[in-house]
Amino acid sequence: MDASRTPDAVPPPGTAPAGGVPAPGAPVPGGSVRGGAGARGRVRRAAAPVLVLAGAVSAFAYVGAVDPNEPGHYPVCPLFRLTGVLCPGCGGLRSAHAFAHGDLITAFGANALAVLGYFAFAGFMALWLFRAARGGSVPTISLKPPYWWGIGVAALVFAVIRNLSFGSALAP
Image (cartoon, rainbow, N blue to C red; front, top):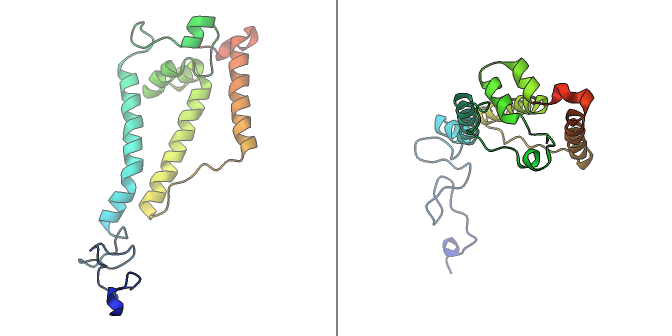
């Protein structure tokens, strides 16, 4: 039996396996490495963060163009409509509208927690784009469960305080 015909046989360097697709890191015609260091590889790596960023910018552009302060453009929060209680997200669209127009004071007044989220998202996107341009991997948010619980408790405390009389400054 010929060794080159066995399924475990490794093709000689510089040749493609039977499927015709070179292995990762193998040279390809044109002198670059597949998924590698060329401009094409950088564009491919940056595609996902650029598309996510384009989606976020599009959403902010829409909310910036269609004013949520005018009735009838967006639905009312179901929790607020049924109970009159402000959830942690209430005022988020008004906050995004003000943020899109560069009015940070009004944005904080509408929903301070959302504004903090915008800045956290911007930091994550900057890190992702930087890593994609340098050939790194997608940054992961690997917080331990106590930190996630802490974030949840902070959102709950924010919601409770903004519904009390002394926390009315946090209400939209």
